[in-house]
Image (cartoon, rainbow, N blue to C red; front, side, top):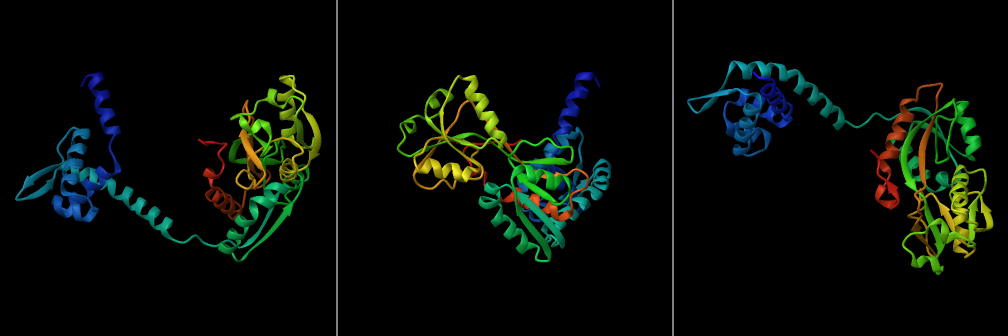
Length: 318
C-alpha cells in the first residue's frame, strides 16, 4: 500500500463511531438486522447503513449472508472479542452515573467576601447542605485580604473571590470569567449610548471601589491611560453599596457584573464598558493539602448551579 493510500485508510478508521461498533457487537449476538434494530431502538435501514459504513472504514467485509442471517467473519469475531471489555466498562460507568451520589459527612469551611457571600452563595450552600445532611458546614464572610490568609493557613477548606490572588499558600480553580459593565442612574444622559468608554467618564460624577480592591487599580490605570479624570464623589467597599449609590443618583460606577447583574433592581441601567476589563472569579484552596471529597463536590455543585445566561457580559469558557 502506498503512503497516500495508507494515510487515507487510517483517516477512514479514525472516523469509526461507537454506534457502529454497537451494531457490530449486536449483530454478532442477534444474527439479523431486524433483531438488532429492536435491541438498539433504531430502524433496520439504520443498522444496515452503519454496518456498511463500518465495513467501508475498515476496508473488509464483516458479515456473510446465509439463510436470511448475517454470519460474522473471522475478522468480525476478533473485533467483537476486543470490544467486550470496552462495552463492559462503559456499562459500569453508566450504572455509576445513574446511582445517587453518596452524601458527604465530616466538615466543610467556606469563606467569601461580602458581595459573593450575600448575593450568590447562600442558596447554593443551603442546597448542598440538604444533599449532605450529615456534613457540618461553616460559612464566613471576610474581606479579601483576611480571606486569603485564612485559606493559606488552612482555617478554611474553600473560598470564592474575584480579587486577584498571588499567594504561594493558595491554589485557584476558575469558576467563571466576566467583563466590566457600567452602571448608570436610569435617567442619566449616557444611557442613550450602547457602550460606555473612558472618554465618556471625563468629569462625570463617579462611584469608585475602595483602594483595597484589586479591580480599582485596573480601572484607575485604564482611565489614566486615556487621560480621563472622573469626579470621584464617594468610594464604596462593596459592589452592592456602589450600586445603591448609583441608584441614589450620586454618579456612575464600573463594576464586575458577577453576581449582581441580574439583581440590579429599579432605578439603574447597565451598559457594556470598553475596552474590555476582565474579571476572574475563582475557587481558592489551601495549596498545602489536597481538597476533601466534600470540597470537590461543593465545587462541582456550584459550577452546575451557575446560570450563565443570567450574565450577559459573561465571557465563554473553553
